[in-house]
Length: 197
Image 1: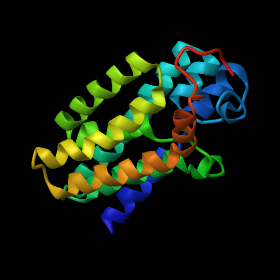
Image 2 (image 1 turned 180 degrees about the horizontal axis):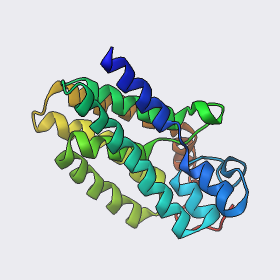
Image 3 (image 1 turned 90 degrees about the vertical axis):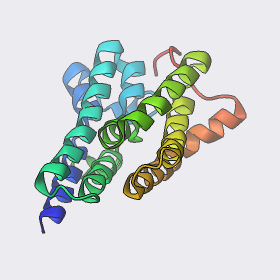
Image 4 (image 1 turned 135 degrees about the vertical axis):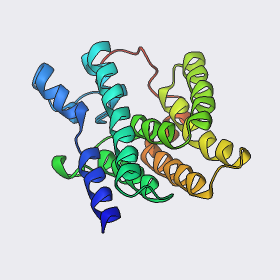
């Protein structure tokens, strides 16, 4: 029962879309109707600028951290924090408060995995950031982070609950980035620093 409550709270927390809220507060717009149409930090950066973009990124990370910590505090077994993290990301991607149209979940994934498996997250994060710096494709860095995290968790021999969490999050990321993958392959993906939408 406590696990179900923790997972439900985590989903509702994840459903708080800071990109949409800040878009409304800063410019009175629905961020999903501008730029790429994605309710996430990268589109907020493109449409609203660095301050709002960084704020959304940090708040979305915080959602993942809080959800995992909630699972640890309420139940404290191996799987409940994992389920709470997955629920927060599902909430971010499909938010009940915003007609189930949310973001792609990468920042919240960072928060979840950094809390569950810090070292693999840091290694994957450094590689992802390097890829973004070199190519200016945020989507490529996001996908690399999602792909490398479960691989590193497995190589380091960490608990299988963490591997399955990272693996499921990798699937989430690739599903949510389908259009970005097509654009990357076609050579017309938006680069970081491109003109605002």
